[in-house]
Length: 285
Image (tube, rainbow, N blue to C red):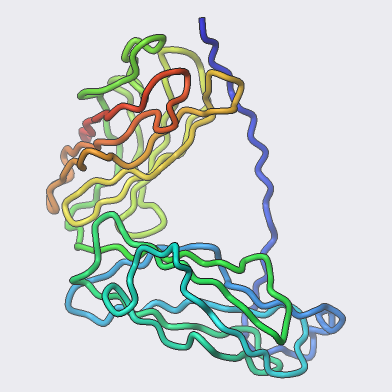
């Protein structure tokens, strides 16, 4: 019989450099002996493309350390990108420079609503320079997603129940987040994202709650990929969820009383079980 173990995950917090001013001041003496590195300010972000406005996103580039001369750099579009230049986006400033004494620069990406998709298309950028070292954040992924206004809140306490799906075999179609479980839904990192916490397979053991997210994109509820802290092999292949491969559930823009989410359960095929399509209903209390 399979035994489900908890994975102990160690999270390492990385301290990030922050500055209130783009210009170096005299009290920044501590940077004088540091080698200069240029990199993107972050690894990834979402770009919500809205209708009837100019959609411009600033890709931030920064220098850490003291630079006595102007630092020229170039940004290239990675061939792994699924967004197409001239169709999904245009980009300005692929070759630029950061003046001596300055810390930041930005490259502007313009996104086009008509070409944007619900699932999102990725623009992957790389950074190069002959003047300074390249920092660890040398790749940036921007996901371009179509945005539609959400008229209801889609936040608060909901009761969730399984509609269909579930893993066979050892799991016996056990509901992944239980049946009749109460969850509190909050706004996520963007205005279209929602977040909640739930424990995986509560009927099979007491497992720590996992933070889960989904998006409300132009009438479609789209689950975000998440690997849990639960596995059948001591952590090698964790159980998790991913966006549906068979079609998304829908929601009403102005009514958050109830909505469904369709997603892929166990997308990695853990525990000797194949991935399945599962649907849950969320009912507001």
